[in-house]
Amino acid sequence: MKISFVFFAIISTFASLQVVAQDNNYDALAKMFSTTMPTGTARFQAIGGNHSALGADVSSASGNPAGLGFYTRSEFSFTPTFQSTNNSSLYGRENSPTVSSGVNNFNIGNIGVVFGGGEPSYREGWRGSFGITYSRQNSFFNNVKFSGIGSGYGGSITDSFAESVNSQINAGDITPGSLDATINNGPNNFTGSAGLYYYGYVINPTGVKNPAYEGVEGNSKANQTFDFQSTGRSSQWSISYGGTANEKLYFGGTIGIPSYRYESVWKFNETYNKPVEIDGLTETRFVTSSGSGLNLTLGTIYKPNDMIRFGFSVATPTWYDIQETSSKSLDVAIDPTKGVDIGNGSNANMLIAKGYQVIKRNNSSYITRIPKLSTITYEDSYKLTTPWKLSGGAAIFFKKKGFISADVEYIAYSGIKLSNPSEDLGNDDSFLNAVKNVNVFYKNTLNMKIGGEYRMGNVSLRGGVNYQQNPYSTIFDKSNTIDRSQMIYSTGVGYRTSQFYVDVTGMYGTTQQSYTPYRLTDNKAYASTKIDNSYTRGLVTFGVFF
Image 1 (cartoon, rainbow, N blue to C red):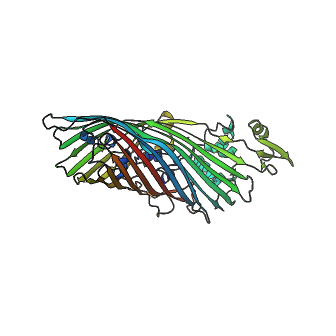
Image 2: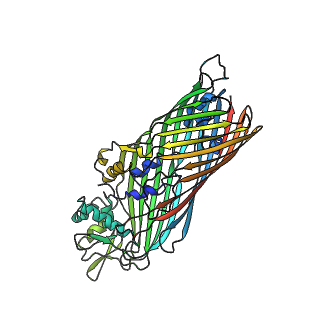
Image 3: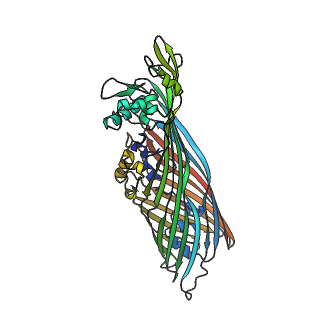
């Protein structure tokens, strides 16, 4: 059986904005890689990311490609971006402090070239433009921290270790006797978490059949700290074409070639005020995931007159081929003056050969140091189908003074699909459960965007608001007070001449999330963390006409 650290509750955290902490949680990662934040040039991001009914911008290639039909000359643009992500986390333990954390990231938000279709002429018939662009769809850089003190049952993560092993025993996946052989390949090659916990001496046998094990420090007061870090991005190359035959009805299409790369390190640490056997532990989980795929976008814009435009686009799912690796390690701290009593020490020589330190005292053997333990690295591959996306909008133009535009975006999250697992995943419970549950835990959403631009000669002032609806149909944390919808506010200014332009945009996004680092059978014995997440983004687009 696969490493048993795939808790579906993790998806309630970090799966939106730039906050991500899924481990190898297939359904959660599927959501993350299906989400697209405001993208494109500084101009279109300044107006809330809505551009269904707008055109003549490089962003049209990854939005509504019909907008390329408005080009009358060629253009090249480049958009560097800086983003600062911040989190304020409060662990649901008594007297826990509020912990702040964050990360900064510089990246290329958009770059592209459009070869324009020439000046409008009703006598020449069809006129079109061709574009090639790169856009960053999402950034996975993040850092989340929190801390607190737990006491009594549920006060230690070792309780969850014991419940995990007991559930595998009850399911018939392992037997208590089989755990003795799990160290045969050495302390860094466990094939599952059960052996890791067993030879980390963080679970103890109870002497009864059910439950067979209990947490070694389950009744201790535990000082707990959590640190999560992730890096990565999702992006897309777009090959697009848009045109018109009558300057009223515009059509366009895009072939999208998306890809992503994601890496995360999850670290949970405990120390004990009055330890019984061990002084503390640190569990670390590593995940890397990467994929590439293909999608198609079709769009149209109707301009009945110079004042009003209507736009509509539909984006097919992205069909991803995904490769993932995952592993786990465990560091256990022991007071060398006390040690862990292993009785007559019949396996002492074997442990010493594996890197443990063992001493004899009063006819008993005591472990005084445990080497760093880790699982083998698992490699998985499977297919992900992201949701369909439909966008529709309208824009009102006030001659050369500017415009107001608004979009409604429909994302069919309930249509996410995981399929065609590798042979190793074919009988993996976590993957099979994800396949079944991915349609249950998500709902389809309607996102709303509105923005506008006011022109004063060569200078333009812009502003917008983007509302992203909560995509979850289930409450995963211990409170229903978390508002997982997102608000993104943007403003910007631009300067444009007949040869070049420069646009500057600032954005601020907010949302709330919740995270439960471990769960137990007793709902009252563990705690969730409330996370207030925000990010600030600054971007500049430089463009030239040719």
